Image (cartoon, rainbow, N blue to C red):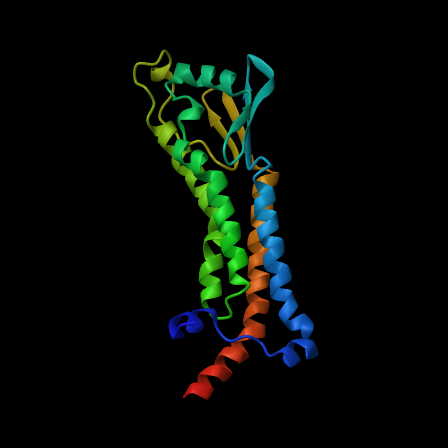
Length: 220
């Protein structure tokens, strides 16, 4: 084991120390494993939903967005959007959807790898997963803004609708249509994973920072 690698993963807790204060070293593992599990589970749940209320659809139209697909009244909403010059929903975030399952899997592995790293590098490994919910919403905002501000000027109702930015959360009005956007269970799971990561890193620091400092003092 090289010196650089040892410095990266940090010191190991002595067996007698772990036996004496087992919970101290168990808590970081428990929280980080739960975070990785929640993030993986989120793949199978919708992250975001939008309901569109229109006069010709009294019950409204709804679409749910998973990390890799969209379900619901996508065709009907695309039909309405066509008249105002907005591109089909399926054209948004194509690269993100194609890589999403792999990316979330990698984020989960990075969380788990932080368990075995007892230095500040553990926080760096977990950081992408910690920020993932904000990144998802930021990407949603980018595409909603892109679609809303780049309407086809040759569309049938292009003159009736000014370019707009649909809200990614909350209510919005587009002409005679009302949109209601909200987080869904998958994104709540991803947020829960971020909270668990924070808790895991807190207990990780409490457990291993004294060992790192002791090792540094021993080498000085």
